[in-house]
Image 1 (cartoon, rainbow, N blue to C red):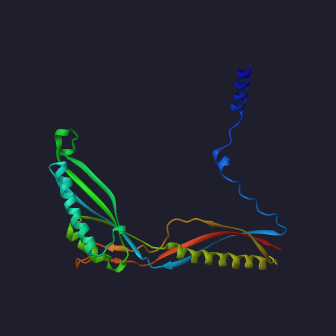
Image 2: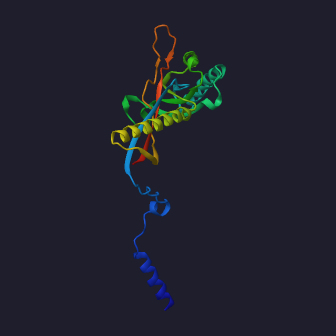
Image 3: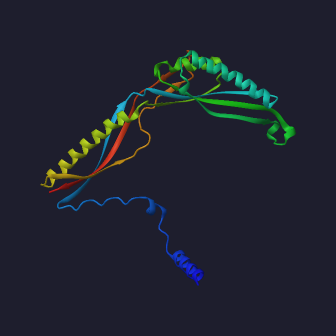
Length: 241
């Protein structure tokens, strides 16, 4: 009898609709307060322009040999020379990161059977961050002289982008307030209070990202940094009366 009662209880529990996981774990958002006046929603964007202070470049070395072991050995020796050049240039270990390491068979006539393997190729790519933006070009030239045979980039960025974005956020708030005042005056009303504020997350930033002049006629690599714009968008709800 006890067993039948337990089974019946389990069956009833199993038939109950399960609440979504998000509803079980996430706390509900508080509702907006009841407004006595007119609701006004404003979206405003603040923007600042800054000169990038970080340059990120991917530099790689590729080798090819009759055997896999020899291809890896040659690649490791070449990469050791490249790392020594980076050390001489003052690039810190924290600014050097292995992006990928690959070993592949090279087949004759595009055929895949093992007996058609002609050689093996090895590749090692590093992500290098240059904190001296102006000195990045000569270091790239030194890396090519040390054996780097492919360079991709640059990607220009900031060591502390949030400081600039905070300025953009402040500009966005000021813009939202001024816009609310404009609407209120046009409606013959006044701004009573701010009801809610939310930020729209934005990834990336438009603006000049610079470029690497890798094929300059004087064989000297230059990086034109230019400027980048960082922005922040806020959505502000006002109450007018």
